[in-house]
Length: 162
Image 1 (cartoon, rainbow, N blue to C red):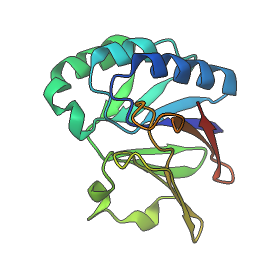
Image 2 (image 1 turned 45 degrees about the vertical axis):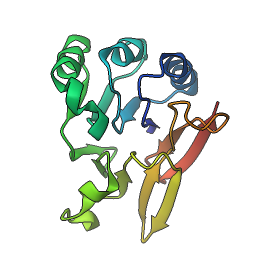
Image 3 (image 1 turned 90 degrees about the vertical axis):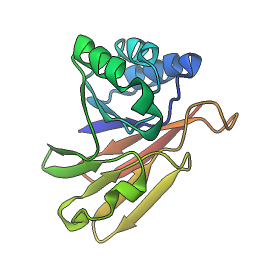
Image 4 (image 1 turned 135 degrees about the vertical axis):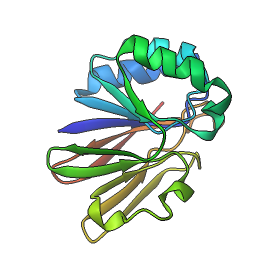
């Protein structure tokens, strides 16, 4: 199974449309948003994904949490306060926004650890475990917008820049 990973969209609607098109063309089976959506308009655009959307809320979502949760429910997405724990294709996954939210979690039980917040691409492998952040796509770093794809069978990664 290949999954899409996106973080820190910060309500950049132009980029969100590009992200949806990239994921729809990529053949991923699910997409995970690691937080900092900021407004329901972003989720409206993500409703055009051809696959289910999962995710967590970030620190910049706190002020809009009520309307974001309503939008998540409206579109049938699956979001949670971090950490979000998933098991897909026999791969244990934990999703947080801020990597500091990993403190106090027994990370040995996860093969895939996803986070956002830093706006920096992170691909760290150790002992069969992958810590992954595809970077940011809010437009703060022009030419460096990126999303990621993870292959769960071998924890392979692909970065899509736009």
